[in-house]
Length: 287
Image (cartoon, rainbow, N blue to C red; front, side, top):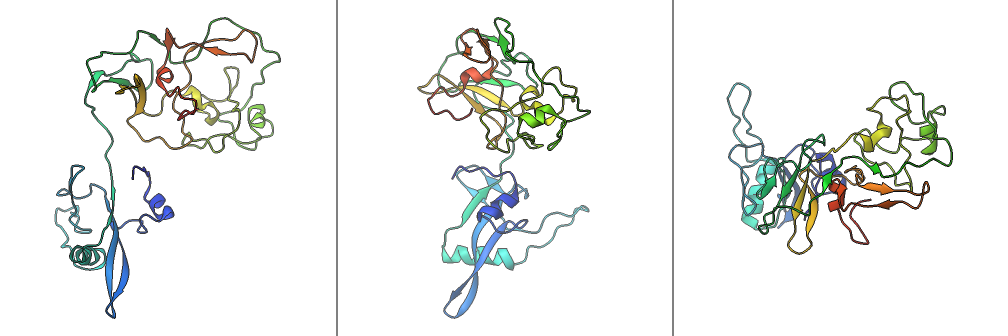
């Protein structure tokens, strides 16, 4: 329970639902010398107008019978998955239910629709449905990292001359070569591996702003919220599912760096972004 899948094929790969399109997955069960179909899982994908799905109850009307473009409808037939579901209802065997969820549009307890005041490409809501607190301690929102004092690099910073976007395997791109010859993330912004350090293109690079090697410079990709917890102050949550390895946000807090590259002190007391509300445990949920 609690797992999120973004594609039907993912359900097939992990064995939760073998049908790539059909809403009912079933197997044949031999009982008293006869083979009967038995439903093992259903996917409720909001495709039918009369489906009821309030969390505690699901009314599943079966598969097929969707309206045609001309307004006519198919009659559902008691065969295949529908027959298996009917047999399972009479037999009383348990069926795995996989619910399709629509995107979150609203949220109870919203205090402030956008605490970034438009400085991020997506709004970040401030939410409290626990008590009467109106927000965390006052701070100035800064979406990007800010260095208190300038510092000089111990060696010149390399920059690329790529036209358009940097490409994996390009031996003439110093940024790609610093990443062991490959782009560190996919076209969806998900890390393909977990290296100790990812080298991104910088301000002096000639590649476009949409280059895949500028992942942290593109701003927020998911809708986030800062919410009040019952016993741990304010936390960071998401309205959208985040894939493992997906980019969340940069560390937008002021940094003190007497000597490059270390030591580096990050201070989020008076300035920062949503990262200041992320996990502060020794074993955090993102890095």
